[in-house]
Length: 415
Image 1 (tube, rainbow, N blue to C red):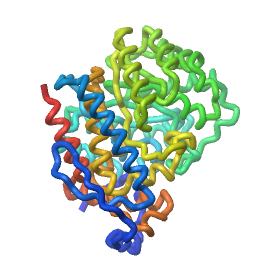
Image 2 (image 1 turned 30 degrees about the horizontal axis):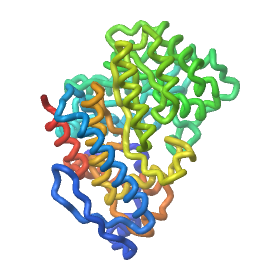
Image 3 (image 1 turned 180 degrees about the vertical axis):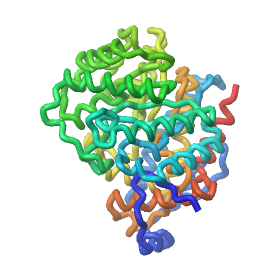
Image 4 (image 1 turned 90 degrees about the vertical axis):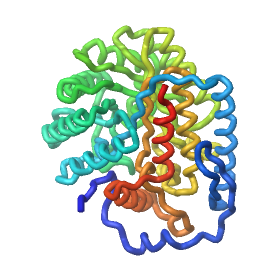
């Protein structure tokens, strides 16, 4: 039996497994219809009913908006998925003997779903020469690239700042004294190494300048002019070979970031990340795609998932709120996750986005049931439980309804 090293998976207590089968008396039955699937009753816990209803309504409006403009048009999208098992935020876990087996197992299952490419986070500071075991990480990612190529899949590398010193990574880093100029030079060197060693199809220098600014304590990155300066310094210094190089401003920040980026002749594409669902996010996404086309740039959407924040919660920090991300694990969200995926594919068809890659793809394999005790677990234990269930299904070749739905979206998007 293959041991699969999924991010954050550690030994699971038997009591946690037992909790999964206990019913929750505080639920309400909501009829949810997902296009292409049979109707199903979804038990939504009382504390999430308003949030569920809000997103249900928002997705209905988005579907109506996109359908009225799309009118059956198809664009040749490459369907990707985040290779979470190879995410650099896992740090030393990537060097375990099981990590390579995990990568192979993930890729095999992705192929069964019809997925054509993978997004891999290979980030700063792990992929810089001064980081401990640097040469071993380079060797690991070389093997990842070989496994991807062996299956005829495309590879998108996100060379982002890792979530060091947060609940999302065991990596610790000290950025005290790191200047903006030093950072630019180190990123240029790192990105050239990625191109030389891994030869990715896409290299995304940065897709969330505000997130990286917070992680590093470097406000220059959250200024559109200084961010454009950083990207131009890197792209001008790279020998790109056959790799397309891009970057993007966060879809939740002003469009001015991307307006500065498209002036860079060395930039091949704009990247888009979609997490919060709202009018401004969709508007920014559409404007970014149109801006790219006007300036002869490609567009990729290499991160997206339904970010389940209530009103006012997004202000607590995009991509940095473990309470909100902990909600993803529960199976009652499946219909909304599927509708969100459909909306992103429709958006890609409408705006000619050539590569689409969902992020939390563990849920293509499994979710977990909800009850009050499970619902009150801390983030680390929730993720541990969900990832254990996903690992078992990856080993056994089983998929969640959301994973099956993504396969149907891929098949249905053939010209």
